[in-house]
Amino acid sequence: MIDLHSHTNESDGTYTPEELVSAARQVGLSALAITDHDTFLGYEKAVPFAVGFSLDLVRGIELNSRLNWDSKPTRWAHILAYFPDSEPSSGFLQWLENQRSERRDRNKRLAESLRKQGVDITLEEVEARGRSLAGRPHFARVLVEKGYAADNEDAFDRYIGEDAPAFVERESPATETVIRLIRDGGGLPVIAHPIRLSLDADDLKNALRSLKDAGLVGLEIYHSEHNAELQNTYRELAEQLDLLPTGGSDFHGSVKPDTALGTGRNGNVLVPREFLDRLQSYQNQAR
Image (cartoon, rainbow, N blue to C red; front, top):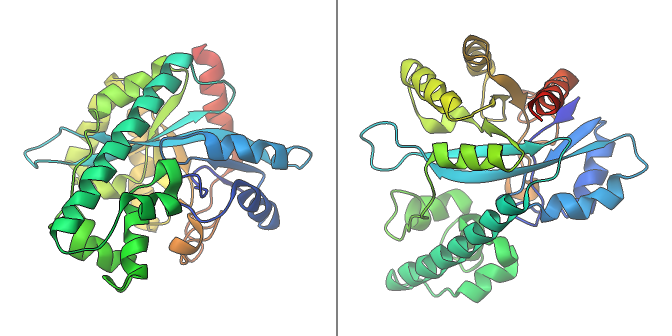
């Protein structure tokens, strides 16, 4: 059993890299990809703890992008990038640094927007919880702690979700651009949790076909939000479009208590080792 989608406290998870490696060993994973948002720091900190154990640690990252597919003003696509047997290029690392600067600028504007809504919040409070990779989940945590929201979901619904009054967009690049940057940087781009794209079957197939032309390599089949029917649908799409299947729990620790590392929600995630083997083989052939 493997898990190709997990997060540490270097982005929006609650486990330290050491704790995540320990948890992976406890549940019997043979391989784990750390896919923090916009940073490799969680992976890099986890490497020393994985050495000496029968756990293959995979370098990954999760990136936001803007999918320009239909008439909806904004549709977001998250891209998982994997570097199973290679290092990212210096150009890709510099682009990531620029993305982190843009993230902080958005966070400043989001804090200002919340204050205009009467919320007593500062960027410093948020960054104390999320550090340099602070994002909306960390804003939500502060909103809950200060009594402005009952829980994270309520914080997003009332304040910082895409349809909420204080929402501020990130200046995310187009999905095709992110895919090409990943490929040029030596990585393998995969569409994460396709359920969140909210596209019907035909539109999703056409969008994926277009993204494959831009360099897309894979599609996340198993995810904690994918039931058995969706898994079958996405598996068939991957086969039809010759995309590599991947999967993972999207584990975040205590902020998503219903999602277990390796097995997702109520055991709905079961990723075979073959998925990682195919990613590694593809990357080796692409060199």
